[in-house]
View: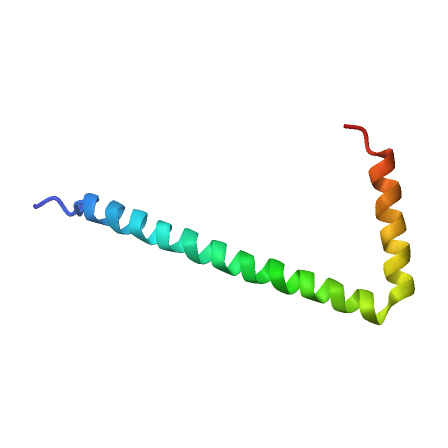
Length: 68
């Protein structure tokens, strides 16, 4: 009976090529996500200035008490 195990070398090359494409796609999606997240934060800060101010003060307090 012939060996049924396929040669794995082409699959590995395909996987490496797809992983590099996937990495580039992942980075592009991440950049879009971070851009939209920043835009959403800016919108929230404009719409709710009081909440934005308290969040800013809270963040500043956290940074002051953080030990390097």
